[in-house]
Amino acid sequence: MTNHRIALIPGDGIGAEVLPPAQQVLDVLGRRHGFTLSYTSYDDWSCERYLREGAMMPADGLAQLRDKDAILLGAVGHPGVPDHVSLWGLLIPIRRGFRQYVNLRPIKVFEGIDSPVRGARAGEVDFVVVRENVEGEYSEVGGRLNRGFPDEMAVQEAVFTRAGVTRLLDYAFQLAEQRKGRLTSATKSNGIVHTMPFWDELVAERAASFPQVGWGQEHIDALAAKFVLEPARFDVVVASNLFGDILSDLAAAVAGSIGLAPAANLNPEREFPSMFEPVHGSAPDIAGQDIANPLGAIWSAAMMLDHLGHPRAAKDITDAMAAVLAKTDVRTRDLGGTASTADFTDKLLEVL
Image (cartoon, rainbow, N blue to C red):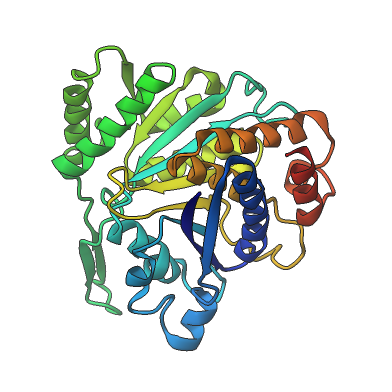
């Protein structure tokens, strides 16, 4: 029987509330499909630890995670700690230290969920955003000068490398081959004069190796509008770090709630563990109330199973999610219902 070693990082806020439902679901699928999962929990890797010790995780944090098969993360962030401190103290070092250069965010309108967008209908909106995850606009290159003086300045450099963009594009085109054969590249080469034309050139270059994939490009501002006006037209959308981050959150809202949205931070070569996390963040305003939507974490767990080589088990989870939403009225508050986190999890487990 295959055993997978899973690192659990609950983190902050509702992160500790949505990981246990994901674990419950994973254990059911393990028994059904003949694999086991052994968990190591890193409960104090959080903003609370930062406030106490000055670091989100220990200095040897990556070494502690290195032998795991995958990482399941809850959420990061707390009002008492600046966001750039919490993210650059935990989430981003894991992404970069483990070369998780693909951020994968599926978007789907489920039957039984009313999108706030009139044209976003179940069965029609089903696409994925492939976001570059380790360079681009979120580089570490830059600095501050003349702090506190009238001529104070800040410089942030966007860094796009041929190797980094090409490997992402190859992943996105290969994914489009497996899906509906359509790829859309997000750009802004009419206004950003160096990095975006470079991005466009590499997209065209890599597209030549995938003749069966139809592709095009859209300026990010027009693309954001089309996500709202014509969400059903998209299949695979590939974007830089910043553009992909913004577009995927917008798309999650189009799908009905950011509480539904999962994400995978992938090292496709499997030289390092990949990390899976809901998109919703720590939501400190509802933490501790047992009202968080666990679906983002549960869908992320399904993505983790697919990555670990259990696609049938992953499909069991997404099928059960769809059944609960389509055939019952059990909803958490973000979806217009009154169910608690525990209530919703119980219903999902019942359907499973």
